[in-house]
Amino acid sequence: MGESQSSKTDRPAAAGFEIRGGGYRAGIAATGAGLRLLERDGPDGPTALTETWDLGTRPPLSAGLILAPWPNRIRDGRFAFDGIDHQLEITEPGFANASHGFVRRRDWRVVNHADDRIELSIDVGLHKGWPYPLRLTVDYVLGDDGLTVTHTATNTGAIPAPFGMGFHSYVRAGDFPLDECTLRLSAGTRLPLDERMLPSGGSQAVAGTDYDFTSPRTLAGVALDTPFSALDVDVDGRSRHELRAPDGTGTVLWAAREFGWLQAFVADPDAGKSYPGRGRALALEPMTCPPDAFNSGIDQLVLAPGQQWTGVWGMSARGS
Image 1 (tube, rainbow, N blue to C red):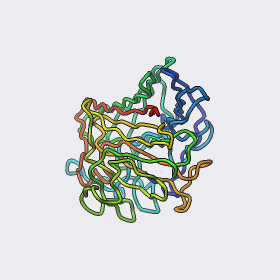
Image 2: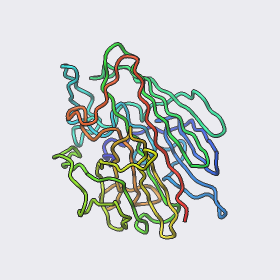
Image 3: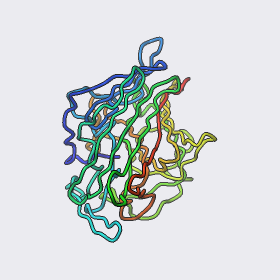
Image 4: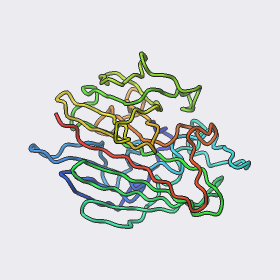
């Protein structure tokens, strides 16, 4: 999802960790529990499956960061829950929205770290307009089938809490420019957005429109900042989305049913949003709910006191 210029204030990540397994390598930053690189070994060296950034630098366009306890945007920072009105801090002043939650700029603590996995945790305390304490964990695991990411959220408070989650992942097909690649999305509908990147109507079928990526389509000249839903799942209960290079290689992003939404965003220098060293770049972001879900109620989660939610997604290399 596009990051407004006014909200690009992610502070540098100093602490980082590496995991390896199944021929894959991942780099994780403590700040935001960010996935700062994912690559797969090959005969000619490693191939990048994600856009990358260096420790000690700001994650460009919030790349690889966790978005919680809500993903995307809340209109005017206002929502009502259980009959109580809440006013969150406006973190996207250009659009007057509360954007992306509280945890992408904070340091997470390491719970477990082995050669092929790392688990990090953070407590979401009380904030302006947010009286709901939560504990979040993320577990990154590498194996022969690539990267598996497991998120949990636990309501540690005494009252029910609204909840949503997303992940700001950027996918890449090695060193191929984005416009030489094709995209396939297992998505049947898209949600139209207005100039504030908030819903402007109900979901619409993508069939026969410019938003239909159910068959691979070139990304040359394509502009996207779009929430997709009606995700088509395979027999294993996972939806799969593919960025393919001209030689047939590429990256597969999959998500279990808990992530019923996918935000697709193309960073484009012509629109004032460029990924350093790459220019145009593609974010495929698994999310549990659409923008402004705390007001629309669409796929909003509610956690009872002590209740835990778990969601899983991942990435792997696509062979030729």
